Structure formats: C-alpha cells, structure tokens
Length: 223
Image (cartoon, rainbow, N blue to C red; front, side, top):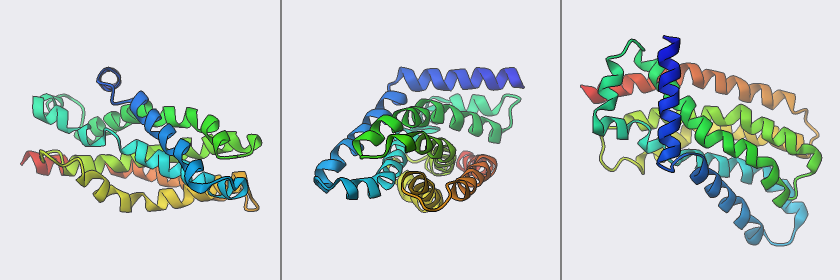
C-alpha cells in the first residue's frame, strides 16, 4: 500500500506542475495580493503592520483555492478517478494523497514565500519565521477542507465558482486562529503558542475528517 501511495503522490505532483496549476500560479497570485495592498492602504506603515497578518492569511486562503475545482474533476472527466477507485487504496486515502500533493505544489510555496512578502507589509524581520510557521501549520487545513467542496462539485461542468462558496464558511475558524497566531508573533502581547496549538489541532482534525467527508461526496457523485 505504501508503494501505491508513493506512486499516486508522485503522479499528482507531476501533473500539477506540468499543467501549470501548481506552485507557480498560486505563488504569483499570492504575490499579487500582497503587492497591491500597500497601494490600497497608503503610506501608513503602522497600519500596514497591524493588518499585515490578515493580508497574508487572506492571500494564502485565496491562493489555495486555485486549482481546487480541478482536483477531482479532471480525473473524473477522463476516467482516471474510476480507475483509482478500483485500486487497493481506500477512497479516503486517495483523497488524502491528492490533497497532500495539492498542498505541496500550492500551499508549500506560499509558506516559503511568506517571509519575503512579509517584508513588503512592514512585518518585523524577527517575526518572519513565526509568520511562516503559522502558515505551515494552517494552510494544510485549508487544502483538506477544500477537498470537500471539490468532491461535491466534481460532477458539475461549471462547478468552479461553487467551490469557494461551499468551503469559505468552513475555513473561518482556521482563518481566525491563523491571523491570531500571526498577530501574536508580530505584535503580541498574547503568547503565540495558544492560537498556534489550536490552529495545529484544526489542521489535524481536517486531515482526519475531510478525506472521509470528501470520499462520501465522491461516492454520491458516482451514484
């Protein structure tokens, strides 16, 4: 089973990078959001520093949504998803591997780029590592929650716009504690460990439950 999981993960990452919908598109979108915000806010560096964590997290959320609508739809259209369900892997495991590959190609570049983009938002250099840590702890939850919306719209020809509508309410707790943890790291005075622990717990919960829910939605789509 481990060999099948490794092969599936390699397939998903290769396809994501090959079609151009992985790391580059998400990172460029993230850069665009962060780059235009200082022009909208104006020259007030103190205000920019206060809202910087929220900007980073909203940008990461929107960048994570890129490509989620095609997470299962492309395989459903060409019949690959039917073949995957015939393998020895449970459907929930297949969903989890596809979500992990999507995070590696889309979410991980955002985590890597966050410290550099944080400088554009006047984030203190000493807090840049903590900002990247909070994104690393929370962005997997955004991806795994997104699999539920992608599975619900897999059979819809134009379901791309429905995915954000379905999953954005579910991502609100992750966004709240992600911004809180980042604010604590940047400005204090609250200890960063408390919201970061809750954020990590939400990620672990989504990693366990979201593939099961997405697999159930896929079975309904097959029926």
